[in-house]
Image: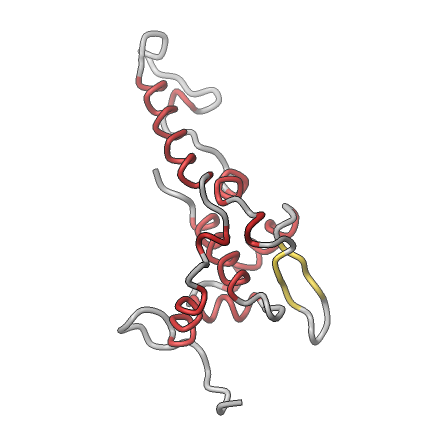
Length: 158
């Protein structure tokens, strides 16, 4: 099982906003701190906004922020809403077929495996993922894991 980049970026954006709840953020800041495409993040932010996870404000002091407390954002729900589908095998796809589909038990096994996979996400909220917020902020400010150059510009200590 593999999540799409769209879902990965959505989860990372939500985590970023959860640890920066004291201020509105810009998509540009999120992209720079993670070192990922701003254009991709704009699409993710748009979808998260339509789904009710993000609040947006226009203008010089605007930005994006969580629309709900992190405790109320279930990770399993986010994953399900961000993914296009979970058709893991041909027989699970609409219109898909296989010569042995009528007698095959693989579809049931895959469906149970997917259910188990998603149940782990269901058991966590955004708050669970960001309990170590100060550690996450420190890593973002340093530019990520050791060996990765910082993408953040110095602000002169201000």
